[in-house]
Length: 132
Image (tube, rainbow, N blue to C red; front, side, top):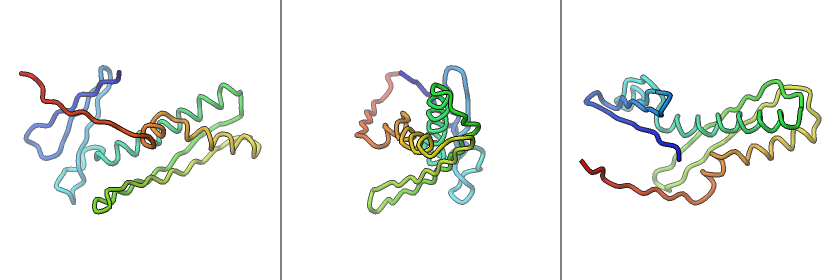
């Protein structure tokens, strides 16, 4: 099970986020009252999809010994609060000597990344109050 810890003090929106081995800062942009010191929550979920897609494609191409020299993934995210819907657009650029069959296979494999599967299947979130 992955565990992430986040905490916020009195500084508006600046959130310190930690795993056992890494740390990042979350914040909101200036126009939303933050200081733009780090990724916004929307940026973090969008970055998760982009990073997972890159890693999944790299692992698959390496296993197949395909000449994939670079993977570039651009993800945009929009949330419609009124309709309660979210929309991601993921654009994948594959660099290397790949034939069309390999390129199409990698596009299919992009949908196998763990974050893609998480976002496109039912999600359950349980929230509980910590015992002091």
